[in-house]
Length: 315
Length: 247
Ligand code: SF4
Ligand code: SF4
Image (tube, rainbow over all chains, first blue to last red; front, top):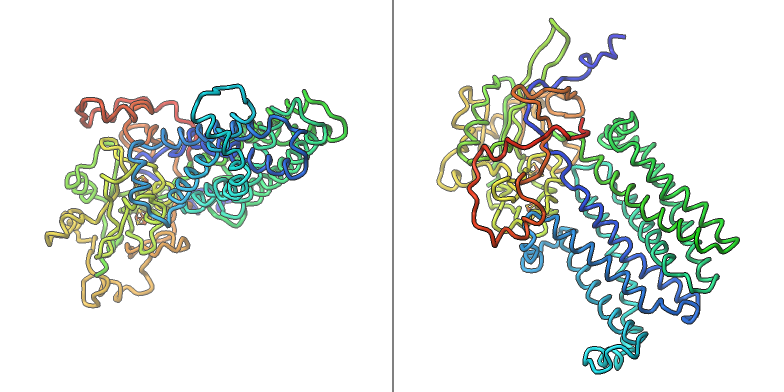
């Protein structure tokens, strides 16, 4: 019995300073989540364009860059807002430090957003030939319509590192053992596919059932594998001492336990079954519901995973 | 030249003189610490003992904080010191997420990252760090690790086998050593933080990182606002009761 007493094996801190609370909070969660949507719609959109004819998804050519543009700007806005000196963001471009994934990511994300903006302008004015007929920008966009198809492969390629670099920032956060590079890289990828398919499902009302079935397939695969990874990380992080200490606290009903399970059920389990069901019989309403659930649950899961390792005292 | 620190925990008596000297020398605001002395109790009454551990930045040779800093605000000096250029810092807090020792804080006055610099400004003019000078029992030993005859190098040689660093498994190669330390003093996972370990108040966690009075919008407006004078009182009158979690 005596060996179970905390004093036998552990010291008790009797005087110390106040420790920092959560350092990276909801703004970083929102940042990661919005980036998953912004890059995911491009990746999943490319998959759809590869598999189906354009006229099966009439609004995809301009809606895909529009959704990406909106969410990339949310991502950039909250990246900026989270900085204690937002205007000094310019230092990343003036004094870049290339070992930092934050630097590499900021450069890539800026380029990516610029290219998506070009695609949006061309895609929108092409799809709306009667809008702003006398506008020089609109006419230039229409005249260079083929540029869209030329830059698209490059944008798809760039979407991969843009979605993944946050995983490398997490890996470089050496103080948080819970975040291991291989699992974070895969989680970011699944998150992009999940958020991308969910985003496109919400605008797929007039698309062919085959295209929607593909979206349901991507959503089902992404939620399934991401859920498996969360379960593996949540229950079996035995080999990392600090990860295990963090999770032992959460498992015991500590903070964020309820949010984690809400996220898992809402964002992964429910959408998975709805998406699988939708592959048999097309039900637009249920699929949209699944997409919404996936987006909400993904935010919750990311929020928990971001915050819990920050509760561990480091010194 | 590679400057390093060694603390002989057998000598340290927990007077916190170094903590105070550091605060004064570097004008560290209330609620932030570059150097602190942590007390831990080991054993059950009446067989208890108390240990004191001064904790500061380790000036790691392979520093994760330097690696993650996007703008090189954290950078190496030629003498091995990991220094901070607060005029360049963008306040991303990446370094606070990367330092495995929790050695970095967001200065509530400047809203930039800061930490122990081994008193780089004093070293530059040939002086010892403030904490070394103040220590009444000379438990802080500071010097050039590249020089085999320096006090610190000789101390390390004399105590071979008993010299330790914090979290060696992180491969950060700290240039801050301890003699007389053990798992319970150096490893935070071997310590329990029970409520109220802070003698003078109930604040165990800081609610806000950086200036507690500045909102997100305020960060954007800051360059256009007139300077509001902050003093130490500004940092203690905020509500910390709602903080959830932490262990
Ligand atoms: S102890 Fe932390 S702040 Fe100091 S050099 Fe190492 S990683 Fe950086
Ligand atoms: S908070 Fe400042 S010092 Fe720390 S990583 Fe960001 S820019 Fe660098």
